[in-house]
Amino acid sequence: MTDRDEGKALTGTNEAEAPLQSTRRRFLGQAGLGLLGAGLAGTTLAQSLAPTEKPSTTPEEKQPLPPEKRIGWAVVGLGGFALGQAIPALRQARKSRLVALVSGSPEKARRVADQNGVDLRNIYSYQNFDAIRDNPEIDVVYIILPNGLHAEYSVRASQAGKHVMSEKPMATSVAEAEAMVDAARAAGKKLMVAYRAQFEPRHVEVARLTRARVLGHPRAMIGEFLQNQGDPNQWRQNLKLAGGGSLVDVGLYPLNFSRFVLGEEPTQVAAQISTPQGDPRFREVEDRVAFTLTFPSGVVGHFMRGYSAHRSARFRVMSERGWADLDPAFQYEGNTLRVGRRVGQQEGSDLRNVENKSQFVLEIDELSSAILEAREPKTPGEEGVRDHRIMEAIYQSAREGRTVSLTMG
Image (cartoon, rainbow, N blue to C red; front, side, top):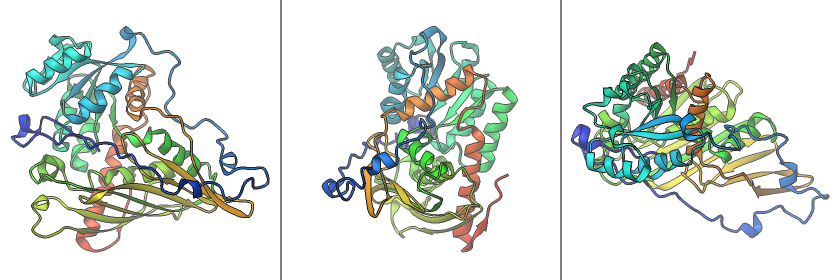
């Protein structure tokens, strides 16, 4: 989940909450979670699941590009997520560098600029944002604002001749998302949505295992992402700024990831929404959303998201001969992948050892690579449009009490 700042400066609402700390859980009973038995005919579960090819992550160069050849990024919004994740990732990136800041707080912007070697002349406010068109150092604008402001600043950045990375959800409606795509296309610039889970190495490994049928054909998926939102006055509880409640925020993660894992678009959705009466957090947005997606291959996915339960984030793919389980899933760091299957006559599961790489660095350098190589990025704006269509169908299904068919195009 991302934390956008500048809500107060732009809309009169309170500043966004500080970023949630990454959940770090230890698996209980690890002594009993390994492979059953000592040898299984000389083959361990980990060996039986060893990758046959390198996981399909965004490639990294052995040596970073020199600073003058890197793509220049401007960060719009200096809240907890920008300061805690995005800007540190830009410092670690191999093909990208931070060159400009946009903020409603001149004092904060100057402090962040000093800490990160940004020229003070490259600080912008929301009032003079459009002046970025005259700054050749800026190649990409990274929009880290409340959801309701993504479309406006994305369109303006495209019109200023800049590429755009938008935090997710990319907008608050299909119409806004399509306007963002149209503006980037008209300007001849790239638009990417920051779907970090598609770059997180353990998530990528789940997709590889599933698509390569290492565990046989996938049959079902389950996922949950819940947390207990506290402040009823924060922007996420404001329908205009958020575009919805738990579905568009934490619900977007398993929704997008399920499509990524299978490489398929769902054909049907059935959903229910449950919101407690009298809770001031839910005057405008929904609390819990349960929805089921049906895919062309016959895979069925059951998902639950919510804003009123203790934090829990898990995702499991169940296939013919085994399963892949992320618990926790969707965290900034500390995600854990366990894979289970039958080997010989025994059942077992092992932790999947995957090289640790920053999902934020990988997604940032992916857009820079796409610019340098004149190609489309891995998660373009059209990807976000599809998610918005599905989310609108989820709301429709819950409202009308029926299954809704999807035509993704």
